[in-house]
Image 1 (cartoon, helix red, strand yellow):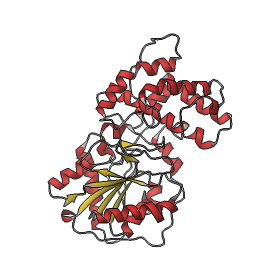
Image 2 (cartoon, chains in turn yellow, brown; image 1 turned 180 degrees about the horizontal axis):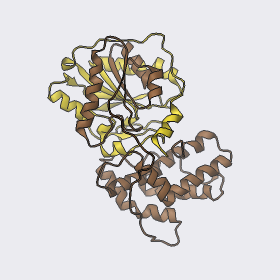
Image 3 (tube, helix red, strand yellow; image 1 turned 135 degrees about the vertical axis):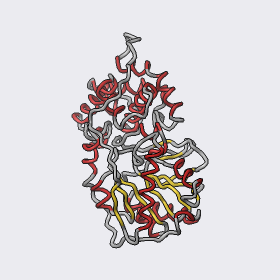
Image 4 (cartoon, chains in turn green, red; image 1 turned 90 degrees about the horizontal axis):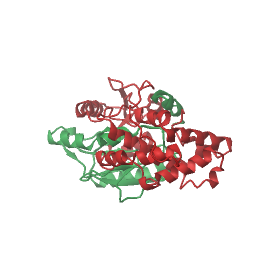
Length: 148
Length: 226
């Protein structure tokens, strides 16, 4: 068993077709509010876990550190996140960058989705826009997307 | 993930997507993509290495200077050679009346509890089956491996989720028995190649496939290339 063998199983999956690629120019990083959007199915223990076909999102409180992953796929290494959450959800690193003035501010809340979804239309038309709109309401300028 | 990046970008949020699979990030073409040739499950590369993680973030944020969609490659790869395996002791036989896999799981409980504490609860069983019920869950897969119909074997939930709890129970225990960040997949290989329960899970997967179980039910019991 090797990482390359597992990647080979996924690398040719059909990709969604976007006729154009949206492109937003953010404010300078040192003035921007930065959030994380992860598709690692992270959630707090008191939130609902992600079912395999759950295309919704969970709001992660940046002042907490009790994140667990509910990702259903067996095709990723979970020990890295277990050892150090920043391997997937680099919130401590963002806090350090904010303290050094590299980024303006770390958002108070972040978002988690469950990756490896087959209903991409639902993500594209429903839960994706809803999460983006929520994040805009929080004043987020830049989102770092992390998978597992 | 890149689908979400397209959607968020269209909503006015500048996005940067980290990707571990080159072909995937090329074909999904997020507005700003950074391909990091790291093992799946480790998008920031190295657990417990803040300096390395900051290098990844610096490369990611550097893409904000682009004036059009961009895909870049991180300058260092972390390659899994498929061979590294954790060297973890396994408990001696304690209850001769128990199946070796069940006896083994019970013997790992103290290490599991330490692993849960080490990971601040991030890693472990509990999606469907809590630690107390892991031995019974293993017994259900023993029945499948020994010929019982998978639907009648008493698997306490969706098989893939129960299997994930069992694997996580073992890998959490393993994490407590080593004094460093485990290399990617090293705990997983230890589970499937060294433990009695790992053998049971592989045998149960084969049995379910041969019984004609729907493909997702047996395929996702283990990593896909097993």
